[in-house]
Amino acid sequence: MAVARDIPDSFVNAVVAHSADQEADVSLALARKQHHDYLSHLRRHVPTICLPPIESHPDCLFVEDAVVAIGDTAVINLMGHASRRGEVDSIKDALRQLGMINVYDMRGDDGNGDGALC
Image 1 (cartoon, rainbow, N blue to C red):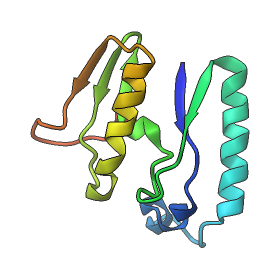
Image 2 (cartoon, one colour):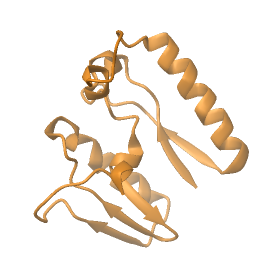
Image 3 (tube, rainbow, N blue to C red):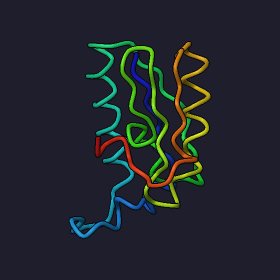
Image 4 (cartoon, one colour):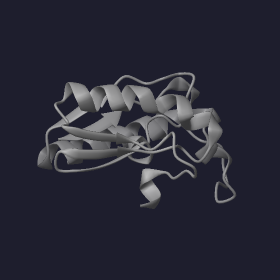
């Protein structure tokens, strides 16, 4: 099972949109097309649910940063960028609703990490 999230209108204000590698403004229309294509490819290989966007968290579509999951075990991360920390509870709730048995929440621990870095 894969978990994804739709792109919020606020994505143009995402942290990724302001990275040093970014040479041009983010096109919301292009981002949505690319995300749609990504989800279409993903769904060909694995059942996928897509959570609604969270407008107050422009980077929320990057769900892989919030959690690392293998089998029936998931680790909830303390997001590295403070602006992203409010995204995590909805991911944790979705995992529990999907029947994830072992969900470990690392947000109370020292340090931080985004799942994409693991």
